[in-house]
Amino acid sequence: MPVRSKNVSALKAGYLFPEIARLRREFAAKNPDKKIISLGVGNTTEPLLPHTCEGLVEGAKKLGDAKTYSGYADEGFSELRGAISRVFYNDTFAADEIFISDGAKCDIGRLQLLFGSSVKPVVQDPSYPVYVDGSVLHGAAGRRISSCDGPDCDDTRYGGIEYLPCTPENNFFPDLSQIPYNSLIYFCSPNNPTGAVASKGQLAALVAAAKRTNSIIIFDAAYSEYIRDPSLPKTIFEISSAKTCAIEVNSFSKHAGFTGVRLGWTVVPKELLYSGGESVNADWSRVQSTIFNGASNIAQWGALAALDDAGRTEIKTLTDFYLGNAALIRKALQVLHITCYGGENSPYIWAHFPGRGSWDVFNEFLEKKHIVTTPGVGFGPEGESFIRFSAFGHRDDVIEACNRLVKV
Ligand SMILES: Cc1ncc(COP(=O)(O)O)c(C=O)c1O
Image 1 (cartoon, rainbow, N blue to C red):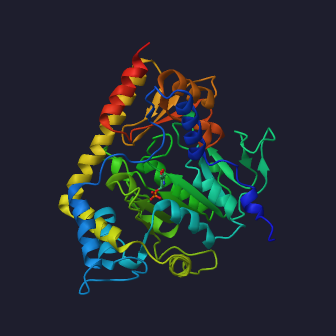
Image 2 (image 1 turned 60 degrees about the vertical axis):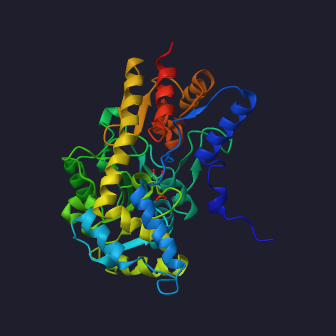
Image 3 (image 1 turned 180 degrees about the horizontal axis):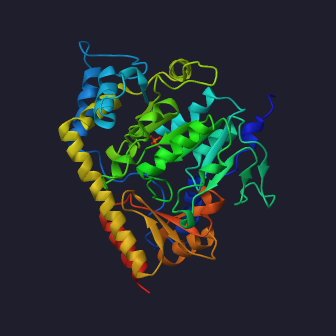
């Protein structure tokens, strides 16, 4: 039999969200009379919006008609790539700099193929788990370091990854002087899990740090449509010099409810070159056409509807709705005098419980309030003593959860 890949065996045994789901199932089995409300995972809950849904239905009909049928769409409909450039990037990218995919997570997982196992991954700590786990799978994470033996040891780190602490003390923006040369810097804003949003000045400093260290930034803008403060940047490319040092991933999941439809995109500027002068854009095209056969045509028609005027209006209403949930959760936590961050230009609220373990707080919320949250330590060692609340939920459930929270 073939042996197990060293990279796969180096992963922590349980991915965070299946582990939370397991604990929830266990609690539900023991307490069948209790209604559990989930404010834990970042899965959208509201139905697809009518105009966008119409686009999907029309797309399906096109596939059922010989006159409009289409097969593989390679790197995406050029019309959709153009619409993304217009709506999100002020038309500053050509269609062939935007690659349509089946979602941001899939692209994040594949992007490291471009850089091999010798690149130095740099992550914010805490961070969305796929940056670390993807690096482990690509063999770039180095030795696993844990203070205990168990496969799920909470303080697991990898010796080859540079972790940049993002804490209340530094306003959730890391010390950029810690970035090594030739790094691949994963940066997420609005941030999952902390809800922090980097300012334009901070992104300019990040770009300058990447250039100084000959590094490339993978900027995850999956929550950009939750930004309401007009002074906050929605894309790394608001810093014009980022075109020579950054790739951006984004997705229709969190603003158009496409978590189950699946559609995202990655911007790889033509100006972005490896140290040897080769084009990263050309390589990404080669990699994608080799191991990915393009996103669903139906999803792309839906996305085109989501990007026209009627679609954009619907999306604003939907993201306003989730931000309304976030405001309710923030208010309930404030009544309890729990210090919390985020939730204003982001659907995540990062609540601090100094001196306590985050799994301990998670269990307390589950057992006493029957509310599922996400333990902060699951996002990295600096997440210990925090838990994440997600604003993705039905309004009635959010209101009931908030009432349970404030009830002594
Ligand atoms: C920061 C971040 N990026 C990407 C994703 C995944 O996006 P997609 O559904 O397009 O794969 C998530 C999902 O939770 C996320 O939190």
